[in-house]
Length: 164
Image (cartoon, rainbow, N blue to C red):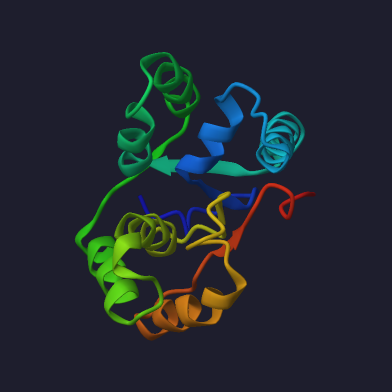
């Protein structure tokens, strides 16, 4: 599903696994995690209707793992979102992101999230993964690899950054 020419009035957003995890998790005792959870709930309740949301089978598979009750809550959120196809182009770009040292080898799954958002023309990739995705140190190399492959990279951001 290529949404870049779909004529959507709303900006497009790829919802990565950490978003549904924070949205549906029991409140954390860790103050930073709890704050991120609250920001995610507020964004979901107040902002999401301003955007066209998408996810992928990769997110669904990740959301299915772990505690069965938590997985059920995550999957209930995801079932309402259209799935972007895992294409050969996305797999190739994910490989380029790792081999081009935009992301480390252990972040291959994160590279696939990014590649899916990129190949399908998403304007934003929404995540709380600040280690490999929403990371200012990695951003310029990520964008460079995507552009060299012929794609416009999505803006990678957290719910706190994506308002309005």
